Amino acid sequence: MSLVLPKNPNVFANSPLDRAAHLRTNDEWLAAALADKKTLFIPVWKLMPFLIKNRDGRREAGWITTELALPLMRPGATTIFLGVHRDMPHFAIDVSGSPDPSADGALAGLGSFADLRTIAEEIDPGDAAILAQAKSIIDWHQRHGFCANCGGPTTQADAGYKRFCEACNTEHFPRTDPVVIMLALQGDSCLLGRQAKWPNGFYSALAGFVEPGETIEEAVARELMEEAGIKIGDVLFHSTQPWPYPSSLMIGCYARATTTEITVDQNELSDARWFTRAEVRESLEKRGKGELRMPPPLAIAHQLVKSWIEEG
Picture (cartoon, rainbow, N blue to C red):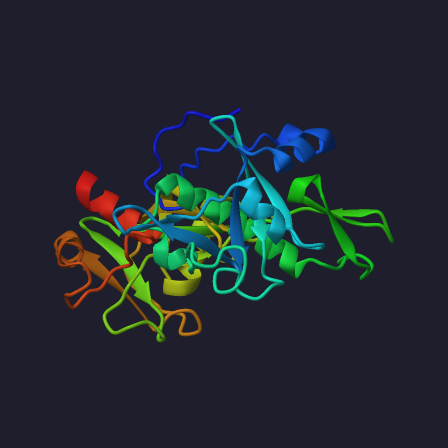
């Protein structure tokens, strides 16, 4: 059952799919869906989705039908049930075990494979969300072929949402790693930091993984103290963003700073500064061409800053 939710401002959100988890163990339904001519498949090669060009010459997700998909389903190829949309089942096929099928194979001349991050803002937002789902799950399968409990080989189950070790009867499930990313605020200024490897003038919101036994609020407070020496009071939730690199969930927050003196952890950041609303607004208006450069709209950090500017 698909959910009707307020629109999320972040790329990789707002998937139109009903994930239909109750069908993942229905072998009869899955077999029928894989053979159904209405079913749509997205090939993924080396974690890159297949793309085609529409009539306007713009790239879009390269959904293919059963006729083209069946030759790609070689023995051992990971096939993931993604969900249902408009009564059509959607699957992803990992074709990484073969030479590029868009160069010489079933997909030759039809399209090409491309890095999801570079095309996410170009394609349909719903497709971008679905492809993020496919990339994360396929990536997980590629890295979890052996049991973490006994070291034995694992096999795919539940239409791609579980791996099972027959040697010790252990079940393994795809993981999602929560990451807090926060914009500390003090008066009419916000705190941004940068890493040494980033381009000159590039700053972003601070971020870090949530640790075991830690709340989101506690993680926000800890990261700001560890990286910049800033103490905070209130934490306000903004939005979340699935981030398939490889399997994070970015949790965007605002934090009300109670101190302003910065002490940078040089192991995490090369610099951190308070920037005024006017400076940040100018940076967004210049779209990365000014002295202060900000993350692009693809990043949740951009949306945090943008909302702060627009809503005050």
